[in-house]
Structures are given as C-alpha cells and as structure tokens.
Amino acid sequence: MGNKILKLENHRPFLTIPLIDGNVLVIPAFYFESIIAGDQKILPGKSSEMLLRTIIKEWYKGIKNQSNT
Image (cartoon, rainbow, N blue to C red; front, side):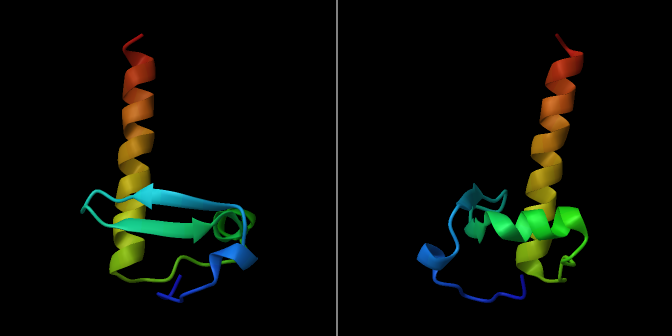
C-alpha cells in the first residue's frame, strides 16, 4: 500500500475495512487480487500491520465459529 492516496472512483470496486485499532481503510479490490496473484507485495507499515491483524482476527473468528457448530 505504501500509504498512497488514490481517487477511488477510478478504482472500483473497493473495500471499506474497519481495523481493530479503530481506523478505517478503503482499499481497491485490485490490491487484494494483486496480492493473491503474487503480483503485489504487502509493504511494511502501520496500516499494513493493522490490516493484517484485522484479517487474521476475522479469519480466526470464522474458523472458531465453524468448529463450534
């Protein structure tokens, strides 16, 4: 991400993600698709750290809930 500011109307669709630290990130979907495809690296930084922690938390909650059913 590199804290780059983009005009979102040029990069639809995008995801609005409330982070576990109370901040909110709005990220174009192509960013996640690029990471999944291996074309984009996750750049170090506070936003990336919070995003990764939030994703892991939600993933873990989903797995934990599935195992309890």
